[in-house]
Amino acid sequence: MKITDKLHLRAVAIFISCCVGTLLIPGAINSAHAEERVAPSGGTTTDLLQRLSKATTAAERISLAKELASLGSSAVGDLKKHLQRNRKSSESSRRSVLGATGAAVPDKTGRFRIPKRISSKTQKKNDDFDWLAAIGKLSSRAGLADVVVDVAIIRALASIEDPAAGIVVLDFAFSEGGLIYRDECGRYLRKMSPYSLPALIRGSQNLKSKSMKRYSRYQLERLHRQNAHKAILAATDENLKISILTAFAESQYREAVFAVLDTTNHSAPRVRAAARAAWLEFATGKEPPKPPERKLALPNGEHTRNKEPLWLDHRVLATTAIRVRIKEVTGSAPNKRTSLAAMTETLFAHFDDEREAITTQDFEKGKAMASAGKPEQARAIFDRVLAIDPGFAKRGEMLGAYMAVAESLEAEEKWLEASVAYGKASAVASDNQEANAALKKHHLARAKAAGGSGEDAQVAMELAAEVDTSATEATTASIKKPSKLILFAGLVALAFAIILLILGVSRRRQSGV
Image 1: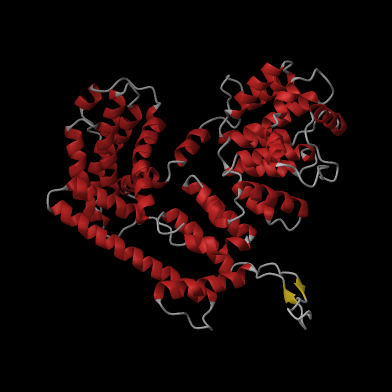
Image 2 (image 1 turned 90 degrees about the horizontal axis):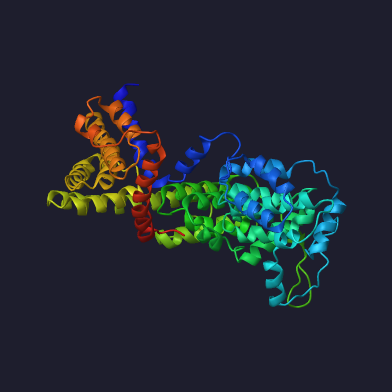
């Protein structure tokens, strides 16, 4: 591959990562760390856990637990591994510690001995009960150190905004060593919502563990998220929405059929793709579990002659749902013999044609604005088009508007905004030479922005030099001596600026859930 082609691909990557992949940047930062997460105090996660196990005062335990909770998603693996450790204390001693605090601890079968009915006031009191504070009041005894560490890890995982952390907490609640903490795990699974929803969705459909199924359904009901539409709406970002949709598909969550179908025309491309993949799993994937059958009671006191299924599986629900939807959007019902796969193809094609018509209409409006000498208005319209369809066929014709806006911002020395506009210009350019010219200006504007704010501009300058080794002396002279920190800081700032715009556009144009 030619170097110009590589640079053009890099420009496209910049645009896409800024518009729809800001969460990749924290991931890139985390992957640059050592295998074990470094705690704020300077030690590793293991060092922090060891200090916690040796803490003797309530204040010290709470302080270390808070420090543990400040770790990011890269610590999930370390925390999971520590929950799986061989504990030095016996389960009976750990039960004794929790019993001394008044914590709710299930018996060895996982059942809780609680009244069948409790008041909302009592329920809230139970939810607010602070295990760690209660444990901190205890003096040294067998099992205390293990309990402190386990409870602190549960809290730390719950503070991490990552569905993977929710999976660890739920799995721990149903492990041999975590059974006694099942109530604490449940409370923190609710507190970490919506990031615990993918784990609870999968757990609620667990065919191997009826106990986990009941437990997960209970947590979803307490969160008012057993309704699939509400679960999707609760997602705070695209990645979490995608995780929830994937959980629906993988767990064969039949109650989600209608919500998933409603999301297959979502304005965000990645969410739309995930919803369609989930729908295809419902429609054409593995066969659904066979529902139980029973003779049903009739109004006259008799029963049906044959046994009937007690509920409709997700395949039957999908067939019903898509027939209704096709009639709604096209005005005519599909033939009764039409397969579910064929109906799916018809509906998706209809959605895509509608979206293409909208983006084409907007694109023509943008071109008219550009021709009228209004590049800023044209840029806003083109942003909207690209938010809906990043691969829009005629996006090369947007180059002039983006370049005009970028040059105007550069003249005003608004370097960060100019770098964003140049990045977009490079991404939409259909000609390698034009793409590289815009890409170079993008990196140089980033360098100017970094230098103006006292940050390191070296990486931006190096990237500009890769595009064109003639990075000007004037630009170099205007920035501070580098220290190799701008790689992520600049990208985060750039991504944040674009995401604010894209989120606004998506909310206005969202046609799905």
